[in-house]
Structures are given as structure tokens and as C-alpha cells.
Length: 111
Image (cartoon, rainbow, N blue to C red; front, side, top):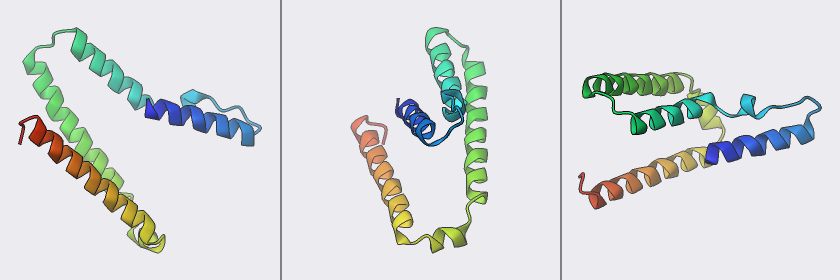
């Protein structure tokens, strides 16, 4: 929902400032639709454990590759030059996500 809202917001904002037509399809990331489709398929249809196990391993590999690509694309010098605020924001987001994740794991009895 947040991604769809931001895509609509950006599309509306760009239509006001640009003379070109902007479609929501160009702004909305298609991987979100594929994620929703995969979620619906695995919820509605029973899929054998042999297939889902392989798909889980493959998804872990893709996440690792994506994180690696993001990391290699980061310009540390440019990041440091932008100042302390973006670094502090990133650290606060990381800390917040970590704390919420750990608290939920304790509440759910996972950890």
C-alpha cells in the first residue's frame, strides 16, 4: 500500500511539473506485483515442500545478490560528503528495524 501510494503521489506531482505524460506503470515497481502474485499463489495452491524448499534457497540467493549490488553501487566518499544527517537517519532506521524485529521474535517465541 505504501509503494502504491508513493507511486500515485509521484505520478501526480510529475504530471503537474512536466508536460510529458507519466504513467503509474513507469513509476510503480513491477517486482511488488510479482511478490503479491507469488504470495497469492502459495496461499491458494498447495505446493510440494520439495519445490518450495528450492525456491526459498533461490530467494535467499537473490536477496544476497541484490544487497551486494546495492553495496557495490554505494559511493562512500559521496555518502560522507552529504553530511551526518543521512548517516544518522540510516543508523536510526537500522536500529529501529532491529529492535522491532527482536521484540517481535521474543513476543512470538521464536527467540
